[in-house]
Length: 239
Image 1 (tube, one colour):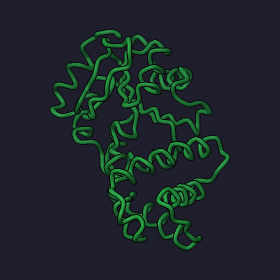
Image 2 (cartoon, one colour; image 1 turned 45 degrees about the vertical axis):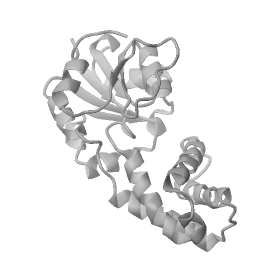
Image 3 (cartoon, one colour; image 1 turned 60 degrees about the vertical axis):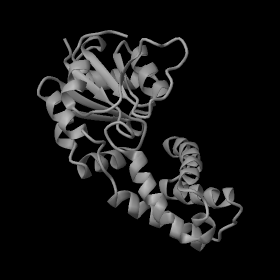
Image 4 (spheres, rainbow, N blue to C red; image 1 turned 90 degrees about the vertical axis):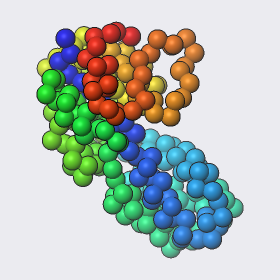
């Protein structure tokens, strides 16, 4: 019996890629050297720098605003331009403001959470900062369906460490056998949940190739229609 469903937030319930794409499109207007670069190329470079610096933020070695400025300093550098501090600040502020106003839930996420919440408790497990993730949930209207939010900043541990999943299970008052995890990161969400004894479903909207030797992993390509996702989540299959 499924008593709790755990979800990742960024690029699972929350459409980070879309929000970042909108924000980067606005940043392109900051300087001609960026306007000449295809947005898809900027996205790839930006995602790489974001991942690198996000780890530093979570470790407490770099402040969030400083990491954002450094991210754009590196992005300009990747196209052969050495920006001054003013241009870096303009780009960082433009991105932050457009990202915040462009935040949206993944299509179908609210409807799915509403259905799930009628049958089980809901937890969100995220490698991020508490206030930032709380704000996303509120802004997107998802917080009303979430019983607990566990983030690495607060927990002091990050996915795929099974202890962050165990902490979430404790808050939801259930065991791994009674829970399901849904997330987009195979390495963090699927591997980590399995290590905690939790059945895992890979949210894979881009259709990425399944890691070698793991052809039996359960997958969701979309949250719509929610009835299809519900059947998979509550089917009782085990990885």
